[in-house]
Every structure is written in C-alpha cells, then in structure tokens.
Length: 56
Image (cartoon, rainbow, N blue to C red):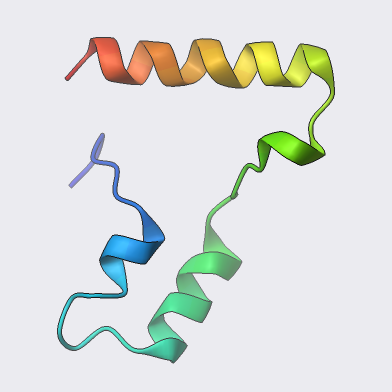
C-alpha cells in the first residue's frame, strides 16, 4: 500500500478501525498543519502535495 494517501477522517469511517488504531496512526505519522508552518515550509509542503497529485 505504498504511495497511497487517505484522510484520517475517511479512515475513521472504516469498520473495525477504532479510536486506539487512529491514535496509533497519529503517533506514527507526521501530520502537517499549514497554520503552524512558516512561509517557506508552506511553499515546500504545497510543492510536495503538487508532486503527489501529479502522480495520480
């Protein structure tokens, strides 16, 4: 399942995935929030997302 992306909110809707699983995922992955990034980091994250979407 490499190179696959899903929103945590969508994952929460999957039967069998509960609060503990979502908590483990949140502790394992890096979650980026644009509000907490500097201007340069926002540009880098936007470029990173553009690269992901170009590959779809």
